[in-house]
Length: 286
Image 1: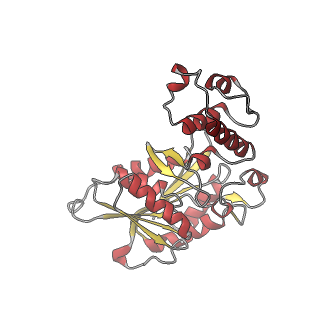
Image 2 (image 1 turned 60 degrees about the vertical axis):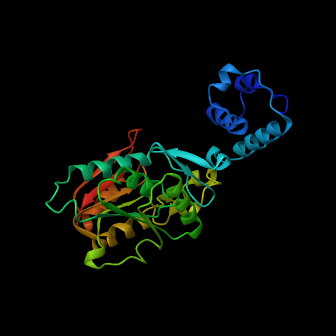
Image 3 (image 1 turned 45 degrees about the vertical axis):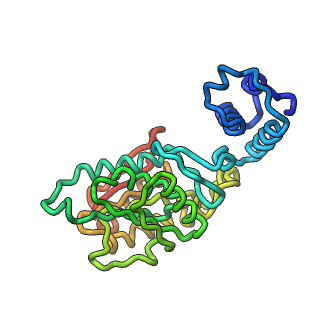
């Protein structure tokens, strides 16, 4: 690939197993230029070091490393997030989860003490922090307190840095295996619990292609339902009466997750589809 030393040559090339979008985004990251540069200066010749870095990155992408792990960042909900091998890469489908939670919050009647009593939101398995931070960013003027937990200390380091980068100060990050470090005291219960837990079946053949992301954050036993089942079963202990539980899950798990919600006392249970028309987020209140 060393003969592809100009922007024009790279733009016109078809690099096997790597999308053109990734190639161009990686190129812009290397040369630190805006996207318009690809049009106005396509005769630009990469330096030897830029070309070496570009080719090394393309090779990694061909081997299965996502673009976001090379650039170290990913856009999500109009914000930018650091990512690394300890966190999942935020995906557009997860924005459905954000939308549904915000829509539910907006639909709630405001009580007389609404402005004086802080509302509380819990994000289970926060990873990069994209869900907690995005929600806290949207709710920062609405007297909400956000708690985000993860069992991984390395993931929490990334989440902390993302909160600082996006100037979101009102998220409390806690190392916890799901609910293990949280209190069931009535004053510490939550109005909303949200989670994007591992939900891919451990036997799913597609896992073999996800070599770069942490498998522990992707797959779960019991056809991918084990963590979801635990979260749903325990949620009533941590939710205020009328509180919302919202969980992202696999495209073929909608019916099973709805049943878990109903078996554990949740009402008005519904599943929302993603941009591709697949079941993606199930919600209910206790």
